[in-house]
Image (cartoon, rainbow, N blue to C red; front, side, top):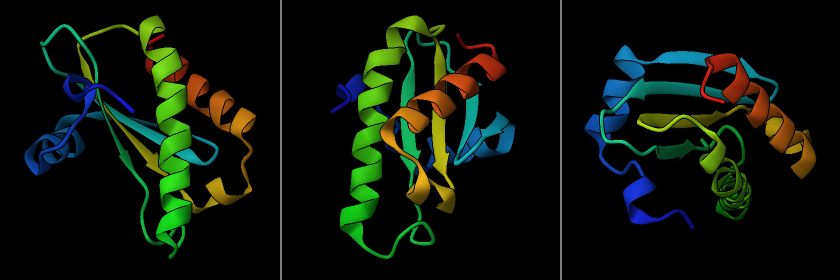
Amino acid sequence: MLPAKNRLTKDREFNSIFKEGRSFYSGSLGLKYLKNNLGFNRFGILVGVKVSKLAVKRNLYKRRLRAIINQENRHLKQGFDLVIITKSEIKNSSYSNLIEHLNNLFKKSGLK
């Protein structure tokens, strides 16, 4: 679980990231980010019904992504709001592939 200070929770925060943020895609994941001037990163994870109609599966993908984020956050530049977007191809991705795709996104965006 991410600490409360590292979570994006409000719709207006997500909306501002989608309107003004930069985006990158790698494999089954996408990343949108925007500078937040807080000194620490905040994360949001979007797993839509198109990925899976079963909430159990969507929650599984979110848990996996949160675990990776917990490990990688200390290696990232701080002071950004990040939204991780999943595509339906995530169903075919293993945990190690998710790590690889997320690290590729962080490198492409210049956050790592």
